[in-house]
Length: 211
Image (tube, rainbow, N blue to C red; front, side, top):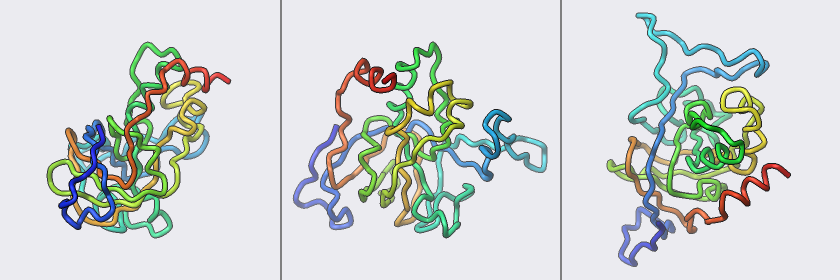
């Protein structure tokens, strides 16, 4: 649900006039690029720690650093990826893919390799837009840049046909503009434009995928 901020909203929000209640359903951090080479060969295994335990990619919270990304993630501090250091995806996009492909099981958001998976907003509308996300410890500002287009790996790690089904719904690549922490659970997404998800209906989505 989007709502305009009152006129007396703190100046720290700048032009972010709309506040949308969302839920952060997944936070994903991976220290290596696991989707390399041919998708048919499968992803690389998760790295092991000194005790032989595989890295936990799903996190309860993450630390964000301005212009750098998520602490511990593979893109953290890489100048070439500054504008794409953090990726967001709408959980509803995965729901729609499940429906369109007739799947009997839910898709794993971690497999999509997006850092932040939100429910309750049109994440794809954040392309080129400034926004902030606050899960209770203060707003973390971001600048949305280009769309996070899906790759052929989605057919292997999610489901056959997921690559095509996610086109136009793959999320957004962002640059963090400030430091902060994000945690799972309820959050507030502040934006310059409304990001309430359009109620286009699952049948119309299915038709668009199968064209």
